Image (tube, rainbow, N blue to C red; front, side, top):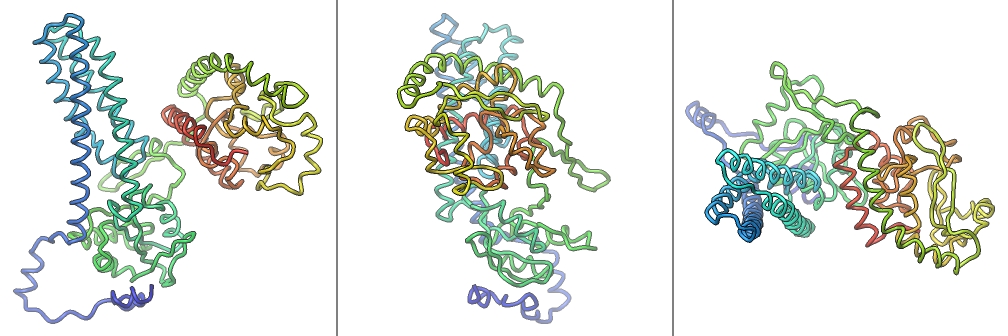
Length: 510
């Protein structure tokens, strides 16, 4: 790191650039009046973004045309006039393509979460079909029911699948250092460390942190996990550091105290060097859905919606819970006899295991599971406590002797939890929510942890798709509290989808 700093002339916060040579007034005027030109780093970023967007455009166009052709074939097979079908097809393909661009779905593919990209694609697709349907009605054209019933779901599914493939490809490229934004993080040490943790790894965020500038005068390099981040310059030299490190993005984690014009001057200093200045909002656990951006007399404001735990949104969540549980219990009823037989043959005792858990508002309920342990599991817990591999209030053992042979398989595939859909149906649990705690765990809760009980516990949740038993107690609590404050039906559906993938490739389940 030292040789790198010396090569850049940045060995210390005070050491930076040589003094400029004297210039005539005409030269100064010409320099001041000349608009900044894009640096090589900025041109490289624009080039790779353009290339990736071109690939997405080609993929999306093929998908849209394919969906339109399939819809047209179905309509003409139903006896619709060919001229009407062709006209609607051209209109649909045009509107769909334009909306995919207008709603910036390709920007979402580069620098936003997969769920946000999927939401943008769904909105563009729904609006396209809605606009064409209204146009067909106004022009007196035949009903386009086959197009809506076939083309919309097929087209959206194909778009999502295509974007999933491209997102996987993009992450692979970013692991090798390509197609990622070279980023400098600026601020006080604690804020910079927090921002860098959120941006790592580059394949997930799209931002490859190559350096930091600390405003509190601390020149020591940062160590985030096993990643060392070099520290360069000071508040005055941010623009020059960004240029010499060939960065195209600057993340401002802290503004200097008593300098309200710092952001404006910094943005001016980055002209021609960086493509964007990102302001960290210091709200890492607040979802995008709770944030609103507005401006009052030139002052940009971030409005944060306070969480609420009742009302129409909860009713919608309950409707989704009942619908999913009702559908899930049908195949579970067919699978249950085989699982019950295996449980019975493997060890003596009942097929189902009932345990008291704590639900919403601290109310207790009986949670039901397929039995995966010996019948004396509870009485043996005290003897095994010294071998606890869990953290905090959780008891976990990777090789728990109380787990039966069949139980180990059931736990690995999460099949032991299938009867909990009955708890969802009767209202004790939700499909998605925090992990349902035991009463002895709740007794040991600290004040903030009780917030987990503001909502119903879930069969799955962020903890389920983020490592399960491999998570520390602190990380498990953090994920649960994040869910409690930021949940939405869209996020619930996304977690359900991720859960299905985790069940196929289980990690941390024992």
